[in-house]
Amino acid sequence: MDALSDLPPPAEVIANNVDLLTQILLFLPAKSLIRFKSVSKEWLSLISDSRFAAKHHGRNPRPSISGFFLGWIYTNQSCKCVSLQGDPTGPSLDYLHRNGAVKIVCSSNGLLLCSVVCNIYIDHYLVCNPTTQKYTAIHEPRPGVFTQRYTAIHEPRPGLFSSGVHKLHALLAFDPSKSPRYKVVFLGYCYQDVGNSYVQIDIYCSESASWKQIRAPCRSLLQAVFCHGVIYWFGYETVMSGFDVDSEKMIEMKKPLEVRHMQVRYFGECGGRLVLIQTPNLSAMAFEILEMDMEDCCWIVKCFVHLGPLQSVSPQLKNEYREYFILCVLKGETEKDFELVLTFPEKTIYYNLKCNSWNVLHVPRGQRIFPLDSCDTAFPSVESLYPL
Image (cartoon, rainbow, N blue to C red):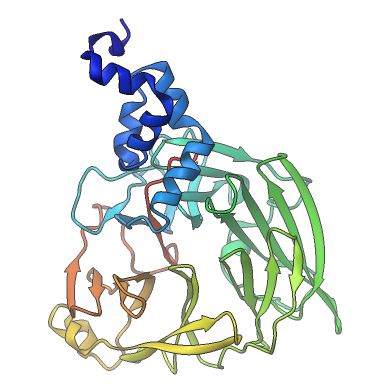
């Protein structure tokens, strides 16, 4: 029996008025809406519609981050979100039907991009939504795009200046405020000889399920990130380059945007802005959080951080050869507020800079972070209704 037949008349009137029902449901969190799909076929159709998902995102363009997924290699162990509030019932990727080890390589507005590795080679990629527990597989457009050795794809290796594709960066570009479709972009740096190097860009579009290949001049490629519709990257020359995902064209920077010759501790998107953290060495206790000014094309200092207060919770910071990693940078309540996810050899900490407070996060048993040979970052977990 349809659940609507048991509703009292006023509620039934609302349930049958699609416009009114839509306005009410838009105020509910994504997790609740997922449960409401079972009310009736009409509710299932409404909540599963990509247009409803876009409206829901418009109501809350900056959904709160409940936790993060760690970017290590998942074999048989549970791939579960590490909650910032200690919630043991957070989303996981255990629903994936995989035939190999899984590594999360990118996240974008609630969607995750994962590589599936079989016998040290990448077999295919998955775009998944942990909220709806749906996913879709992406297979290589032609032989050789994915099938480089796993270590060559995710770690720098000797022979950087020998011929061929040296490092593949896989990025997920999804902005529900602009389009319900996503793109997966693969950047492969190719070096043939002096003065003849380029970046090979393979683009998969979910709307057409088709591929496109572009080549652009590039001297080197070290790190890349998707931010506000553009993929930014830099190389050994420390000068930034940009690729507009919508127009599928390289963009001209108003002026050279450089990255200093220092240790890059974090390079990523934060609250729709490009963020950079550098230190003179890996044991530095203080650093600046830099944010890219889109208009003037320059770095501006948004926050100064000193990790001294964390010595009480992580005595390892008192050592001369201290070691820590910045896994994630999050926006706080205001423009200048930041929160950090830091990992030390003995624990992982969620650090609120404004309040000067921190929480020790519970990492599931058996999932070590140190040494970081298999975990290089953390990916925020946000609720999304986007249908795959």
